[in-house]
Structures are given as structure tokens and as C-alpha cells.
Amino acid sequence: MTHRIPRHFRPGRRGLLLGALAAPALLADRARAADKEPVDVELVLAVDVSRSVDQEEQEMQLRGYAAAFRDRKLIEGIASGPLGQIAVSLFTWSDWHIQELLVPWAKIDSAAAAERVAAAIDAAPRRAWLYTSISGAIDFAADLFGREYEGTRRVVDISGDGVNNSGRPLAEARAEALGKGVVLNGLAVLDRTPQPWSAGLPPLDDYYREQVIGGPGSFLMVAEGFDAFETAVKRKIIREIAAAPPPGPLVERALA
Image (tube, rainbow, N blue to C red; front, side):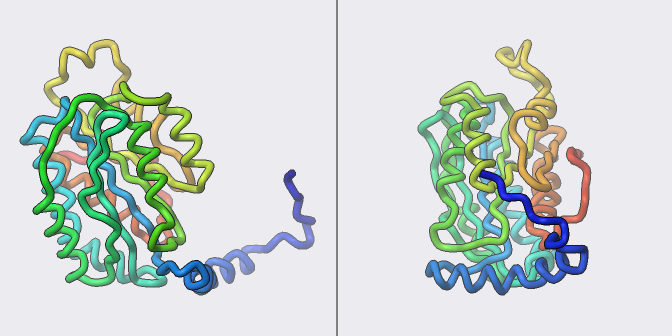
């Protein structure tokens, strides 16, 4: 049942501002009560390693994520948050039942902590599989939240170069994640040498925009080829960790 708030009890702009300023303190109290550490953002990075991503392209993706965590602007962005720390995890995904957690939850509150995450990505195994289950990736990602940290926002960053072709319907997984308050952002990689099986499929950027991303402030970053991935992922994560993400375009594009 929905309860309407009487007009005279609805907060004005000043009330909303005070509420926003108080949010970190309230979050910290709630997190301590639940024995979880408060952070500004819980960010899950989901990386496509299906058959359409060859060995070189997979390496470009993982190198791009590692480089992002060594970027000075990213460190500055984390430090500028109300709590000055975020939590990050990273996994690769392919078939509906194949998700490999390469970086378990890690707190980033300094350049040294960010370097440890980057080094873990550098050292992670490189394995490729077959199908593309975005729905499986969303289900796996949504289940990772709330284990060790309590964030003001819960964000999933899904990178991929194909449409859902394994597992349950994407719309079902997406709706469940959004219902839990998870924000779904996308990083669509446009393949400059399309594969034969992609004939007749919708443009990937349209597909991600219409069927993958969702939630407050969600957006899509488009990498024009895998050689543009590093640029795209740096820009994307910096935008995702912003304490108060400024209004931005629904779709951004990155060139090599």
C-alpha cells in the first residue's frame, strides 16, 4: 500500500539539502548496526569474456580496468566523497552459470588501496567461455551487495559486446535488480569487425540503452572498438563514483 505524504509535511529544497548532508551519518549508523562498513558507493564491475571477445580484446578490457584504478582523477574523485571511500568487486561472466569473481570486495580509500585492486586485476587469470548471459551477470552481481559494506548507492557496471543469448530473460533479471535498488550502467563495446552471428541483431548501443541500463542516474558508455576501452572505462568509473553525480548524457561515447 502506498502512503501519501501530506503536502504540508513534504520537505522543501532546504529540507532535501539537509537530508542529503545527513545521509552519510545515517548510513554510518545503519552500517555499524548491521556490522558493515559504510562506503560512498558499492561498485560491481562485470566483464564479458564470451566467445566474441578474443584473447587480445579480453586483455584490453582487464588492462583498461587496472589503468582506471591507477588514474589520479579517480583517486581524487573517491577522496572527494562524503566518506572518502568506496567498495569495489570485479568478476568475469559468460554463460548463464559462469561467473568468476576475480577481485572480491575491496575498500578503496587511498592511492595505495587502489593500486592493490589494479594489481589484483593484472594478476587475475584470463579465461574465455562461450555464450553471453547478461541476465546471469546481473543476477550474480545483485547477489554480491550488502555482504561487507553498506553504500549510499549500489551500482553494477556491465561491459560487453553482445546481446543476451543464454539464461533467463534479461527483462526479468533487470527488473529484479532494479527492484532491489541497484543501478545498472552499461559499457557497450562496438566491434569494428562484426561476427557472422550478429547479423539481424539490434545495434548494440541501442540494445544496452533500451534493455540493460536502468535505475536513478543510470547511463551507457559506448566504446568505439576495444582499443577505446581504456578511455571509456576511466571516464565511466569516475562518473559512477561521484558523490553527487552531475546530470550527464544518457549515452556517452569514447574513441581510441
